[in-house]
Image: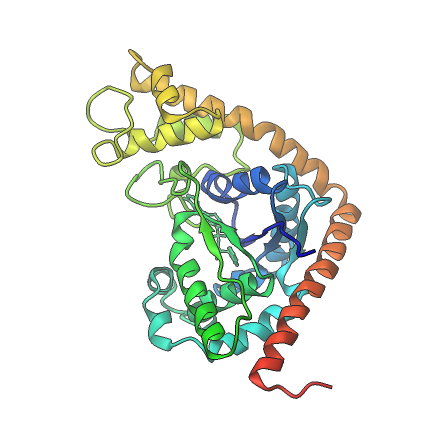
Length: 333
Ligand code: TYM
């Protein structure tokens, strides 16, 4: 009988410290979906080197991210967790897909344009090719769904275009994946400038809540968060972007709808509101931080997870790659 459990794939880059945007846009969804889907989650270290990384730091961040996935509730017994560079098929498929992707398409990518401006001294080929590697990640595992934040939507769309293009030229080879975005939380904004996304690499660290921040830092950053004119705690993304962002954060961290969250602050001022948002976030992150620290002390366990993850990932990826090589005419022994 055909396996009817759908496949889910996602990844995060092991760069800097993750923010609550990464948690709410991606990892929190993964935890909710892991019982329903056949899940594969990668640590995207090959994507990370598209901007210059300190080698020792990259190695350390890799294990920290794995520990974080598990501490957030991603279960290595249910899901495949692996490091992208442990499976050479990613680079191999990316090369093939490069020949089905146009330079103009890559030049139009918003993230490429933003990162080129930020790293003007290092606009390398990898930075431009980043979405093709991401397409290779997703297509290797024949993913049906890809839960990510809204900033990855354009990369998901190009992945679909590449898959359809290849399938049309040859015959159906790749599953055409759908992006999966949280209703609330898919686009968490910077606390000091709600017009910008909260980012791991933001210049002003006060605008981002890092998953490693301690309670006092979290409370202080929320206290300083930009609100809007008026004094009512109401969700209105257009006219009250600061307050709406904080309400979104509060509602997902407290598992409430935004309407319920609004009700919690009826008749209350912005000061009380910001204090409450800080507290709910700090309360939620504390046990995750403790569990991450506990896991990081057990390197043998983390290595074992990566080893078995790489084996599982490799066998799925190789199967797709062999199919591709056959279709394009690579002579195989
Ligand atoms: P990365 O490492 O930049 O971000 C990881 C995840 O966090 C989401 N995210 C956000 N969500 C809501 N609000 C925000 N402010 C916010 N900032 C980031 C991102 O959308 C992402 O889901 N290219 C990817 C990694 C990747 C990948 C893949 C993802 C590599 N291969 C294959 C999916 C499938 C990236 O750089 O994510």
